Image (tube, rainbow, N blue to C red; front, top):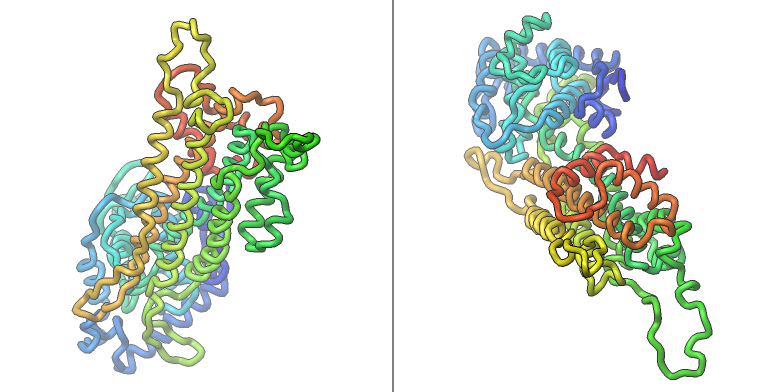
Amino acid sequence: MSGYRLELDGRSLGLEDVVTVARGGSGECVLSGGAIRGVEETNGLKRELISSGRPIYGVTTGFGDSAHRQISAGKTAELQKNILRFLGNGVGPLAPPEVVRATMLLRANCLARGNSGVRRELVELLLAFINHDLLPPIPERGSCGASGDLVPLSYVGSALTGHGEVLHRGDWRPVGEVMEELGLEPVELEAKEGLALTNGTSFMSAFAVLAVWDAEEVAFVCDLCTAMASEALLGNRAHFHPFIHENKPHPGQAESARVIRELLEGSGLSTEIDQVLSGDGLGGRGYRELERNIQDKYSIRCAPHVNGVLRDTLDWVRRWVEVEINSSDDNPLFDAEGRTVHSGGNFYGGHIVQAMDSLKVALASVADLMDRQLELVVDEKFNNGLTPNLIPRFDPDDPRAGLHHGFKGMQLACSSLVAEACKLSNPVSVHSRSTEAHNQDKVSMGTIAARDARTIVELVQNVAAIHLIAVCQALDLRGRQEMSPRTREAHRMVRERVSFLDGDRRMEEDIRRVVEMIRSRELSRALGF
């Protein structure tokens, strides 16, 4: 989507839009005409209500448990500066650039919805940061995800006011210096604006959008891994027959089975049930050993039932995330039509934490599935005549015989990655802490869940990469000529990046290259899914 022009209206932002901006697509983000009108109207309403002398939470009162302390209109600007000051205590690693870009875009889209009472100039400065790729440093840790992502988002607000540093064109520099070069003026906050910048779910939602986007490709790659493992193990592709899955009609399960079936179409390695049972039966005998198993192990046969859960989880998780990123997720909200202001809790990350906790579990289960498939492929007890650990076929008299261990280390690493993914899949939503003098006495922890989901996605991408490299090795040993057209194309794509393992070598760079291919969605596009 190079050269895009993205108009924000607070209502129609898609996940692909966010990913395009987050991952450095060149283009421009602007406010739509309707958004400009809405922002200006509620900003005027805010000024009108302030002049009436009434207490307005976070505007003419203190924050949190200080809401009963009203201040004069003359103090409102300084109050907004202070919220950025006292929240500047994040710790841990800095969020990667793609998360920072997504965070700023989502914050701008929330404000563009026109209920926050901020000035148009503030939103446009935030968009200028995106368009010029000025990235504030946002520590990943410090948000409870209840009154929004207060601590992380305060770093965005501080940068807009000209404080601190930003990453620009690969260098960390004082933000004021970079803004001056670009002809941008730091904003002087007015009433509500510091709160509007910090009081929302944009940071957790940034992680969530990227996790969902990448998990969708993981779901496809898991089906591809299953298809190629079925070929490598001389499996029975009738396990993916429509009749089976039409009679347990979970959409994700049916879709997974369809994808695997279509990937295997034309394969001479993974055969249909009528091929497996061809012949004259027992021929009058009381017993015989079948040449091919009529049922594969669960990690192959039941793969649609496992990956289908991920696909179905992604279906509703995507919808929830899309609602979240097109919401007014701050507080209070100004009602232009009703000419009033409402205090509530739209900053609460409840839907994001539930979505991310569920996504984590589904992803960890798929990682475990792929690890079990990999074990079958590398283990000479189960891989139907392939070499132990997929080592090359050495003649016994070859001086290299007995010295190589092939994919033994890769399977060890894969199991470690899966164990870590399973550990991180524990739900965070049940770990609420009462904070802020018992004002925030039930918090979401949505940011932790979203960060964990991001990490699990990365782990599963590496698991899938190891699996793909291994099944390509297995199919080279088995013989590529009977592969299906689509799996042969997948094999070719992997082989463009990773050579056949003809002897023990380090493979971390091989894994990295295949992870990049998975992350870019090249495989699903090339194979027509």
